[in-house]
Length: 83
Figure 1 (cartoon, rainbow, N blue to C red):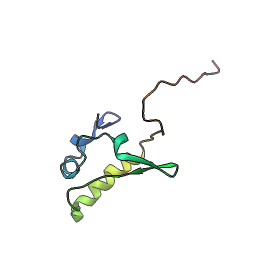
Figure 2: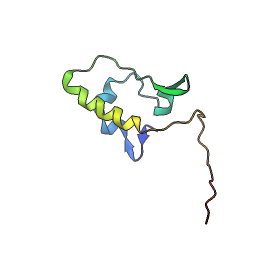
Figure 3: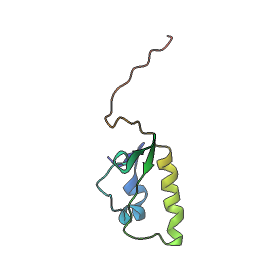
Figure 4: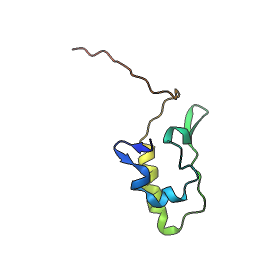
């Protein structure tokens, strides 16, 4: 799904979503592993108007908090606790 936490990004950022060329992708499919780190490859139909740039900045701040591993498949990890 196109969610970060409980937020649907398409609903939270409708203007950005309309301009996206990647509407069918999830965040993990937009990022590419390059030289030991993730690089975000967002695609837009057109350049942003000046008044839209703060909206895109808000989205980018949210996406920066998304942590991806190099492994693309979700998996459960159990970490033993001292208790």
